[in-house]
Length: 142
Image 1 (cartoon, rainbow, N blue to C red):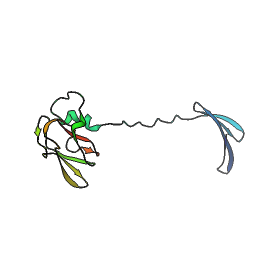
Image 2 (cartoon, helix red, strand yellow; image 1 turned 60 degrees about the vertical axis):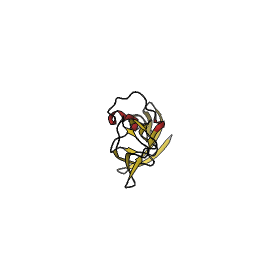
Image 3 (cartoon, helix red, strand yellow; image 1 turned 180 degrees about the vertical axis):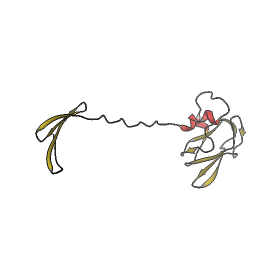
Image 4 (cartoon, rainbow, N blue to C red; image 1 turned 135 degrees about the vertical axis):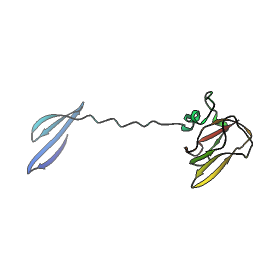
C-alpha cells in the first residue's frame, strides 16, 4: 500500500492507494474508503515491421509480372547505405560485367554500381528515390 500526503487549499490529505483489480483502485483518503475506477490505458500503436522493403517494391519497379519469390543470391547489393538516384537497367536487359546498372548516392557522392558478371536482368528490386541499407539487394542478374 502506498501512502501520500497532500495539502490542497490549506487542507491536508493523507491518501493511501491499495490494491488495483481490473482498473478499480481501493483508495483511502483521510480514513474514508473509496473505490476509484481508473481509465483504461490506450494500447501503444504497434508499428509494422518491413523485413525486405525492396522485395515489396519489385512489382512496382518491374514491368514484368512477378513469377514468384526472387532469388537474391545473384543480386547486386548496396555496398553502403544511400539513396538510389537512377536504375539504368530493366527486367530482360542483358548486361556485361562492368556495366553500370544502378547509381547510388551515399555520403553526398554519386556511386556507379557495376554488374559483377554478365547475364540477364531478372529482377529490379528498387526504383529511383528509394533509401537502401548496406547489403540491400538492388538488381538480380542471372
